[in-house]
Length: 393
Image (cartoon, rainbow, N blue to C red; front, side, top):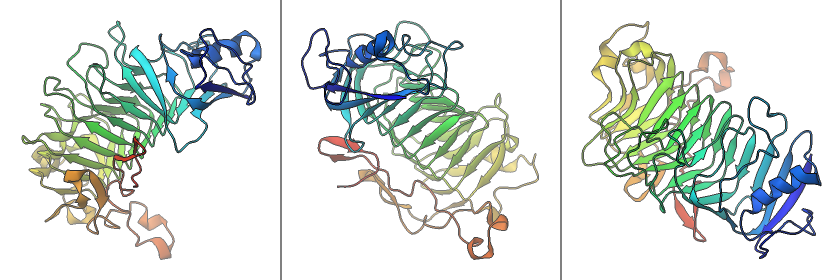
């Protein structure tokens, strides 16, 4: 494993440097592509992976990022040789102009990004192309995806064993399209979404789901909605667990939040989430049998927390509407000031969740309940001109 260095603040049309800290690779455009090419050509790819550190400046693409020289596509690619591309300071996001095109060539594995603000991107020409279509074993850490510049069909598609942590998607600018990932802000299978802030504010012309999750774990995310969808904003496709998330909508016409179509009858888990401003927090097309566990969810200003089919279709041993499971509608908002995007929880949500493991914990901890919603107060406050998904001043 080796660490290579690049500097985006230095002008160089054709590229130069040796990739060391004292002599970083520099190139005016396509600097990360240049680093991939230099590693593949002779600098040497480590058998256990490598790291590319961006020391300064900004990055600009004129073509899709193509890591094929470093990491061949599946099935010949080696996922034991990951590459990390990251900012030198994890508290600062480096601007990355995607050049008005899709970002990366699919399907290269184990390529990870940390500390960037991506902008100026759109779909590719193929039906399956989305701006950020990542393959297996990808990590997106502390990144912002700023969608303002060019309209596009979707934003991010993540595949098996990937994760997205501490990221923000802002200025949603999707439109109706016909691609494989049509309309999704984020689609994921078999991965983790944690500590993210998502603004789903596309035009009403695209009335598709914003999120499609299968076999994934979504925890401590804030999802803020300002548009109208006919079906709902989130679709559970296969075996998802959603825990401790805040789902807030401010549309004039209330819409469903979590929707489980009849064709996806799997045992989902939905616990300790907060719903505000929806027609229905959790709804299902085929009855409660698609949900294995629903507990500790709170709601305010929803037409209903669960739909009648979900509650009344007695196909399991549990009635999740029973007070034992602590699913309840509150008499006031559980958030500090959601109208101004302050999603911190009030005391109504702190330690008010359902402790699924209470019987397995030591006596001293058995009565401690988890918090409800995204209790870190994730909110998009500007810091030095950038967005901080973890809040702050």
